[in-house]
Amino acid sequence: MKITDYSRSSPGLILGTATNANAIGGVSFSSNALPTPGTILVAISSNMFEWRDALAFGSNTNDVSSVGTMGASASNTRADHVHRGVHSISHTSNTFYGDVTLTASGGLGITVPTPGTLNLSAPTSAGGGGGGGGVSTVDQDISADFTTASDNAWHDITGLTGISLADGTWICYVDIETAHSTHYGPVFRVWDGTTVYAQAGILESSPITSAASTHWHFNSKPFVLGGSATMAVQVFSDTAFAIKKYPLRGADTTVVATHVTFLKIA
View 1 (cartoon, rainbow, N blue to C red):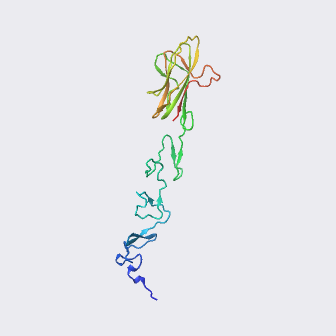
View 2 (view 1 turned 45 degrees about the vertical axis):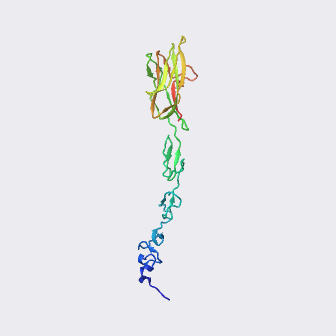
View 3 (view 1 turned 120 degrees about the horizontal axis):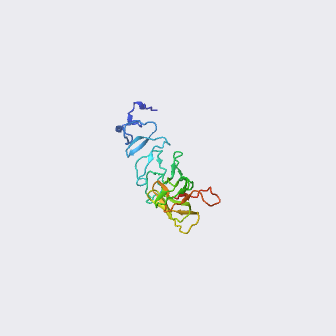
């Protein structure tokens, strides 16, 4: 029986320590580097191989990007390579690939309660009057009885000013309770100092022999605010008369009769 002492043999006879001059079977190592733990033997050409890192499974460190044609890449990949979980959500050309960016818009809320989980929430109601399902209201009452001037000029109605609205699509509703003892022809409007959003004119010319009480109502068409705005209700008159906070007639005189309501619909 022949016993060979490899420690004294040519290094070309020991796998992993061969030099290119002493290749085994015509196949050469690309370098004289020794194998290390976690490496595997990989052919890099028809007559050459080398030791390469073979990472442990589950490290999830090797991201796999796309190539033009399936199977077109000649590169080696690690055993624990990771395929991206989202390739595309929707695109008309069916060629979209890349990062997916979610942007909160129109009040949509996006939070990440845990890594990898997105929580999408509907817009919350905003405004003084409550509401739900994306609809909100802003209500404001007249603060006290208001007596108009007879100067044919616009005047703010006490308490119906400084009404803050956010951007969006709105409709406004106005209720006015008046008391007068002669003919009158006032005009009411809702505006933000620049733009008029609703307006109504009244003409009462029939003979009036005693104090009369009249309730008026008007509303706007839907209007769009591109940013925040501050609204006011104004009156224009050539006759002095009273705008009342509470109705002069009614079963419950504690209910405010003169007020404005803004309804946000989008």
